[in-house]
Picture 1 (cartoon, rainbow, N blue to C red):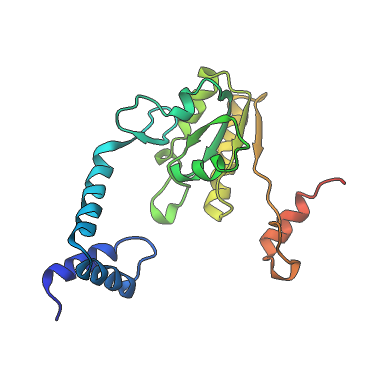
Picture 2: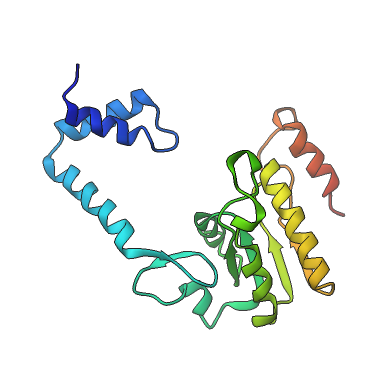
Amino acid sequence: MLPQALNNVIESLGRLPGVGARTAERYAYFLLKSDRNISQNIADALTDLHDNVKQCPITFAIMDADEELSPLYTDPTRDKSTILVVEEPLDIYAIEHTKSYKGVYHVLGGAISPMDGITADKLHIKELISRIEADSVTEVIIATNPSVEGESTAILIEKLLHEKYPELKITRLARGLPLGISLEYADQITLASALNNRTNL
């Protein structure tokens, strides 16, 4: 019923995570009725995305294509002896916005998920282990997501690091109740974690 060109845009937008059929239709129709320059700017930005963004060969963070290494790694004010491990590159920027961390990062590229075909060998775990000696690392902070996959990944990393570097300090981000939440609205996993990670006053 719809013109093929419009259908093509709807189908393409519908492949994005979190974008259902109706949302894709609304986006496509908005682009159709809007100024042609808006669509052109989006098309140019998407082309530019693949041409001008790449991964750091050491940290696997994303960076400009004309850079050799991530600025968060080469910055002389950053402490290379502390590595914070995250699942995806954008997790880094969530940490950076806190302005509370001055170490460096390591991106795994996901979390172990056999159902999705993501096994340990497909993550950047070997590269993390090789960085321990190369950068004289004294602490690894595991900051995987609080999901089944994230927890499984964290446990494996902790085991592998302890086996190879028994003296290495391995820590995890604290788990518990976020500020402003009422106990009655907290889920069981969050409450259990808050109890297990309770602190002295």
